[in-house]
Length: 271
Image (tube, rainbow, N blue to C red; front, top):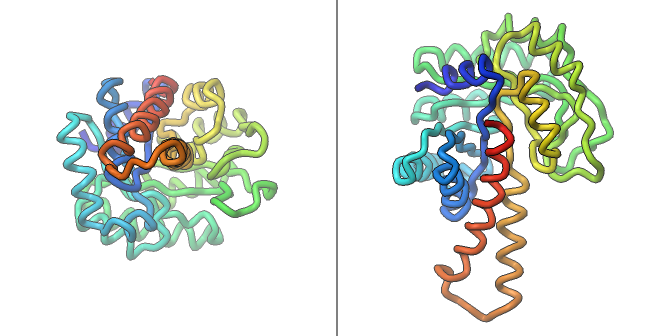
């Protein structure tokens, strides 16, 4: 099933699909192991930084091979694509879904650039995600507020024809200094006027009950990235501090399993 159809199915059933970033073979194995154990679909996400690190074709092939090996229903998605050119490369090489992130552009430019990506993706039947509003990225201020306006959202969706929309309702990328307070009324209003799958970015660190409520109000895709990197590295640092083992085949598995346990807990929140 194409991802845009799967997301629409999730929207109608008030469910969501978990979207997890991967950074190497070990984190990929961790998230896929969890999806297999939970018998759950999964969206595998690649940022531009991860693509640059692993190589575009290599990263895509790793994801595809992993999905087949673990027998998981899943899709490969470009996360936070910062240019039309990168989205074009991902569409042409065979990604199932791309995100063009023009959220820091003026609304008119965001619409203009997103429309270009939607047009390119249409003939490939590829899902296109966009972002509207201010969801603080790593290193950016979390005190600045730029919540998504329902009026802007319905206008943006109508003009661009985008398949899914990431909305700013109180989350941020990275870890939170205090528990985030999600604007559920705003989310409900956006869902009612747009009638498309909505996406929650900054899912790492959001309490489980908050995620469940957001899903019930229209969130159909929940992104988790920072927690994956954090738990993998913390476990690895702990293991390396405790012994002098140099065989990575012995060191990596506990860190992989830590990622799996984390993602299994996240999957329970969206089903």
